[in-house]
Amino acid sequence: MNTVTVCTALLVDQDAPVTIQELARFCEQQTDWVIMLVKQGVLPPAQGPRPEQWVFTSVSVTRARHVARLQRDFEVNLDAAALMVDLMEEIRHLRNRLGAIR
Amino acid sequence: MEFKDYYKILEVTRDASQDDIRKAYRKLARKYHPDVSKEANAEARMREINEANDVLRDVEKRAEYDALAAGVSAGNGAAPPAGWDRGFEFSGAGGAGESDFQDFLNGMFKQAAHKRQGFAAGQGDHRGAGQGGGFDGRSGGQAFKMRGEDHHAEIEISLEDSFAGVTRELSLRSVQLDEQGRPYMGTRTLSVRIPTGVREGQMIRLSGQGMPGEGGGESGDLFLTVRFAPHPVYQAEGRDLKMQLPITPWEAALGGKVHAPTMQGEVEVNIPAGSKQGGKLRLRGKGLPGDPAGDLYLILDIVWPPADNEATRAAYQQLASVAAFNPRHHLGVQS
Image 1: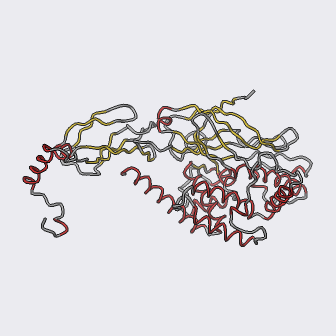
Image 2: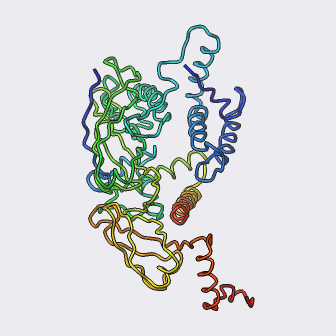
Image 3: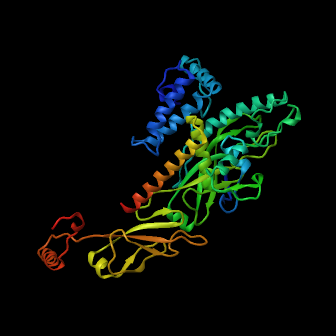
C-alpha cells in the first residue's frame, strides 16, 4: 500500500529561513565562504546581528549555489563567478521582459 | 536498464586524463548552458553533461564508475545497482518537476564517502566533517550520528496555483536506507500544500523529507524551488504580473473605457487619451496575493484594423487626408 505523507510546506522567505550553516552545506563550502560572499556584495546583506546568526532568503540561496557550482566547474575565482551569475540573471530578466512585450 | 556512458556524454575516450575531462566539460558547458545555448534540448543535455562531469571529475567516483561499467560490458552478471540510471524525481498529477539525477548520485556516492569519513574520523581525521552536517566524530569511531542530506528539486506550478494555493501529490523516488543502513531506490508520496502567493524562485522547505540520517541522526530537508509554467496571458515578475492589453487606435487617441481580464475576474479600465504603444497602466493589488499584494501592469498594444473592405479603406483615406502626420519627421525626410 502506498502511504501518503502529508507535509507542511514552509516558505523559506517567511517561515523557515536558511541558516548560514545550512547555506554553507548546500554549497559544499565552509561558513567563511558564505561570509565572504556577503562581505563582497555577491549576496545581499543577510539578516541577523552576527554571521553565525545570519539567515538567508531564497534568492540568496539560489545565487550562492549558482556561484559555488560555477566556481567548482570552471575553477574561476569568486569575482568571475559572481559576474557570470549577474550576467545570467540579467539575461533571464531581459528574456522575461521580452516575453512580456511579444 | 540503460547504463549511461559518461565518457560518450563528455565526448572523451575512456583513457582521458582528468585534465582532458575538465576541458571537455568546460567546452560542452559553454555550448549547452541553458542560459546562453541556442541548441535544442540544451537543458536536458546540460543535465546529462553535469551528471557525467560529477562522476568523472572525481577520481574516486570515476574509479567506482569504471569498475561498474567494466562489469556491465563484460556481461558477467555484475549489473549496475538498482536505480543506477534513475533520477530523484517527482511525477504527480499535474505536477512537473526536475528530474535530478545528481541528487541520486550524490546520495549514492556521499553515502559511501560518509562511511569512509566515519572511519577516518575515528582515527582523528575530521577532514570535511563540517560538510556532513551534524557529524559526531567524538565518539572515537565506535558509533556516529549523521544528519541526512538535504535534497533540492524544482516544482512547476501555474500562476493560478499560486493565486489560489494548491495541494500537490508528489511521487518521490529517492535513495532511502534499509534497516541495515544500505541504500535502495524507494518511492514515497508526499502531499504538499503550496501556500497562496508563492512566487517564482521562492523555496519551500519540507522538514525531514530529505535523506534519512544515520545512527539516529535526523533526516535532511527537502527544498523545492518554485517555477511557474508559462502562462498564455500573464508574466510574473516577483509579486507583480504583466500582460499585453490590445487596444484600438481610437481608444489610444481618444481615451475610453475598456475591459481587461485579471486573475480575480474582468475589470473596467480607463485608457487615458493620447496613450502610446507600450504604455503601461498599473492596476494596484491585482498581482499575486501577499502582504502587500502585487500589481498588475497592462502593457498597451495598439492594434490596427485591417483595411479589408471599402468602408475601412475610405476611413483610412480620410484619416490620411486630415491628419497631416509624418512619423518619419525625426529622420529628416519630407514624407
